[in-house]
Image 1 (cartoon, rainbow, N blue to C red):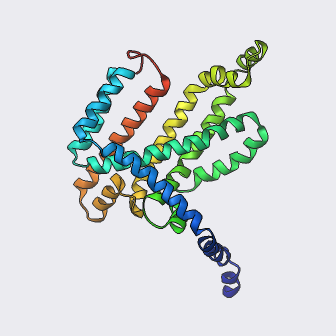
Image 2: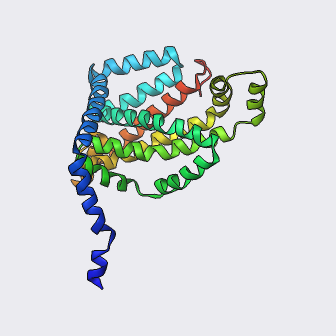
Image 3: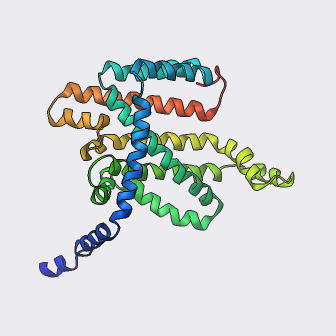
Length: 283
């Protein structure tokens, strides 16, 4: 009986499938790794190109001019905190990883969320997949990524993207489903093309829920940061892992609070940028 269970267990078929993929699709995986590494290197190099005080000053001035002073002060405080904890480089590595992951996740999830809101059939196919993806523990996403891409930042980014897609996709679908049908009918009556109805009527009405989806995508991506440190992704996640494994509670606490600072920075900045309010109107 034990022999039969072992012979016909899923692992008996899964291992050869993984080996076949690694042998026959290795050039594809290598190409993906090169592209992902190039994107991460570019993002990280742009953040570390100038001293920390120069980047903080530049971000503060730009945000104050384009958004408002309160958000600019918050950005300065959160970035300055990463300097005070002596984890500036690790924070920029994490910021680059999360930023690239969120951009890719939004580019994948947003159009599919719009399509799902247009078709009940597509939504019915996507919904079970999203339910499963949001139920699976986050570290499970790292296993296939590490199998196909080895250790490093590439599997961390891929797992972070996959983990961040479900909330963005689900809330995008919900946002467009909640748009009053009367507004869409009004656009159709006046002869507006579908593109204008989408960008000038539906998106403004759906913006609050879309922003909530973006917020959840950012938080999900940051939740993967600590786990990404386990596969050699570096950044603040590696510092948290190092602090826990070496029982250096001070380092772990500093790294954890720095992750919170990065989360506040990304959340408030993205929210203010997409709301597009005046300098005095953003909360």
